[in-house]
Image (cartoon, rainbow, N blue to C red; front, side):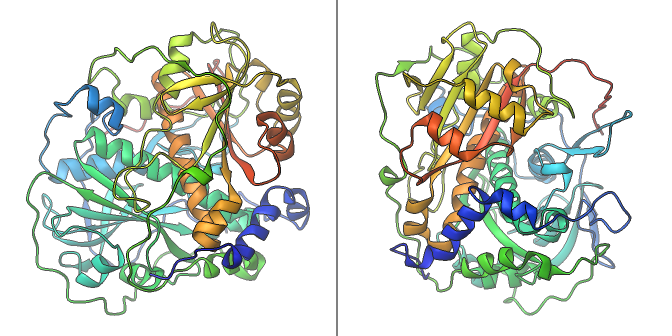
Length: 528
């Protein structure tokens, strides 16, 4: 596999970092597309004329939300309850990873359909494909696209995972139950946001990865993320063009049950037809396409191990460890948390209630737990730094803290959070950040990302941060809090707050945490 060992090949990516952060106002000044008309892209890709398999109704309960975290498993070595790899497990994996969870009604319901992962304006640019290595329930081995609207699979190819695809996903085991491929369908967001859509697609893909890991862990399945794979064979396997839609990440899903099937005979061209409703000229987001093309990899070598140390800021001060998580297994049901997860409503006006220290600890303690990925043979903590601006809590005291993977909070003295709160209220008036319990900032080292991953670093580091963001969002929901992810902030102000020094460290996520108040919106769940 062709990989980058210095920053020269990351020049285009670094320029894109600037355009979508320091230069975002200039980027937006180039114009937006309109939305809300009949020409909008469909929120879910829909194929024509292909066989479909309707999945079994997904179970409401999938297991404890903490089973994917090594620290939790170490304290409970019995592990999650054993489940067979069957149609019910497949249904639960796909639905709870990226299915529809509720519908929004009321006078302000401009974006009525909500999945179990947050999405900018509910555009949902990520698509899920699954290649089953063996027959799974009533679904034969083969490659499928997941249709969340109808909770069904559209058949694209037949047979087990072909050797060519397995070789592309270096390290994939022959007994792997399935490969889940996440693609970015750029048009679904770029018709509105133009080139900025690349950032939104990368963010959402990271959150979907994080959700898939949570769900797989709760189901007792092993899952491993692959960021660095040759793009062409993976795109060819799915029948996507690599321009309008391209593979962003691959998850290898393993099971304790034996899985076997005859591999599919190679990857001949796949010609399919799907519904197209948006005629916007893709030239309007040409920089996005140029970056994605520059980020492609070729070859068949295994990815080189990643040293995480250069990606992180020095840890200041003395850590204050969290109290131990004494909640027994199966007491934090992931299915319930996913159905409760929300962004606070159109106008997020948090309730005036302080957040107890225990709840703050419980929603943060697993954010930086190691992730199984192709960065290393052993799981590696996300390549992100996490800072917490405590505003209204019963402890710790108001102020800025650095999250240590221990887990612990490290006070960062001498930082005044008021300018940051004022900036967030000004930039995102639909969120009253001043009344929030806390704000979480996830930052990455873009220069180290370019040095290590080249132009693919933009995508990979957003994925890493998205994994942590989804963990926080879901565990916040388990504590009865809303988590509003916003890009409406001045990165310079946040960088000054966290004291990153220089411009290498970039805040890529801001998450406003608070208890939602009743509004005119009515959001009934979509249940089977």
